[in-house]
Image 1 (spheres, rainbow, N blue to C red):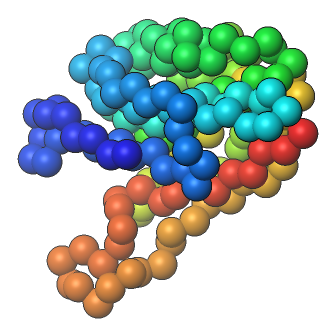
Image 2: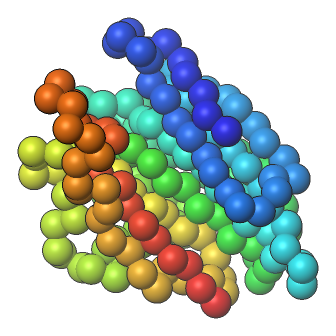
Length: 178
């Protein structure tokens, strides 16, 4: 599932959410003007996984990003009311979290920043030609934990001179296990 909203820039702000497992619920919404896609997947054995793909406000707007994060956390709790010992909530995407103050908002409500958990202070830069880690994967679960995370999509995908990359951001690959 993919969406586009107008955000004042040519092309707007886009988010996507993919799963090889069927979604039992999909919600497209806006967190203070920025797009969010939420999906819920149920697995045998009672585990429910709620996923949110985000593109949060950029610039010197830590307070607005904190409000957007809180909004998405609430939405994840709403679509995944499973008991805490069978649930996994994941929020991921472009958090535009480039200021130290953003780190507190990213990990509110018990969410764990997968990069910090696994890589500590290693940079994990996700914005091409920059020294910033804008993109995050955060996890909320009593029984699931991040096991692998790495930056991906660093390579050119075409010989196109105008823009040979899939995005101006690098991707994050994250594995979460019991």
